[in-house]
Length: 349
Ligand SMILES: Cc1ncc(COP(=O)(O)O)c(C=O)c1O
Image 1: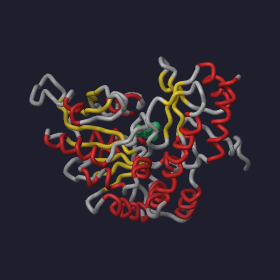
Image 2: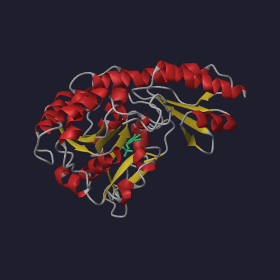
Image 3: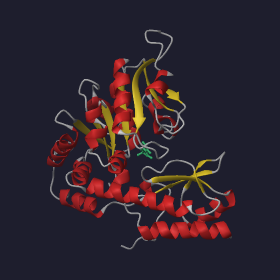
């Protein structure tokens, strides 16, 4: 069969626009054939559990799910009782981009905090960490942070440690939306556990799709006392894959060697290259620090309109005209250079 699209054309809209890494496709093919027990009682899921334990510690337990929204909802539901709430940044994906799933499907109240750069701090957490014991207020129970953040910034290990220590002192748990945890770890050149297990994160949503999987994310419980009922909640929330071996085989391929790191380094390097290339173009202003694979900028609206006809990307903020350009594991230097050249052309048109 031939492709229905131009497989050489790249977008800068989202790392989800990328296809599947060839090593992941090979892993799926290797898991195919014959029969395996359904619903996770298969040898690939067993191997996947071991690989997650190698990265996150012997106590870590991973549950594959279909997408990142589900990883967040299942994680947060397993950490909270019905009267409890989750503190997060106003820009958090769980608040802005999940169709209200935590609230509507999960029944979880979100307590949001405006942040300058998408990052919570102990001081910002305190804006919502109050009212304990007051029956009129949803009881704060979890602090949820994303690394990297929705604004392309990242938390260092020390920053996450400070958040965890403050949250734990208040009796709160910490959830990390690690949809792009691999990008954060690669950018900081640290192991995955340095930003999670080692600094006190209790439950992690681990991202696979954006870094080369066909699909698949995982709920990873790092502190067994922080979550309960994940097995049941995953099923109730329609996330129990019958042919789980194919999700698990992908995670094993991603995490057993250095594929995750190679892919994340490539995406981040292309983010840096893009930022350097466009920052020299008069009329283009970078609006946020470029710390991983996302570049945010403001440019004239007519240029945005014309450029978007040549390459797909999102306008992040309609009010200010800010756009987001995102690089993926398969973005090449030639892709970035072609995009920057197109932008320079359109600025002169
Ligand atoms: C920070 C963050 N969390 C979670 C997700 C996962 O969302 P999805 O349900 O689209 O897989 C995304 C996807 O864009 C994201 O950027």
